[in-house]
Image 1: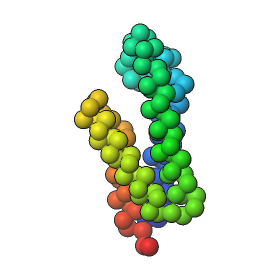
Image 2: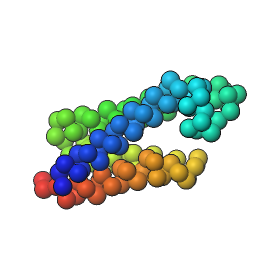
Image 3: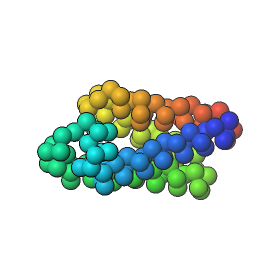
Image 4: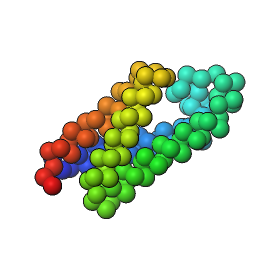
Length: 118
């Protein structure tokens, strides 16, 4: 179960690296516009906010990588909890699909970690 938990956590971390790239660098580009269903005008006016959001996603990914690299399960679970909260809030405030893209993979990772011996 250890490797399942690690792989699920890596998936969550890599998703957040992808979110960082989308929000910081591709927000006003075709992929960013399509992914977030934005118009070019709306994307341009929200570009700085999106970049800030992308930076936070990068911090989530960094914490997950750090926890995995240094074998710190408490840090990994804390960071996964932050991802879950962010995903649930995004689903509530922006779009329900955020729950499935962001929160659900983190929930599955947290469940997997519960079966790893301490």
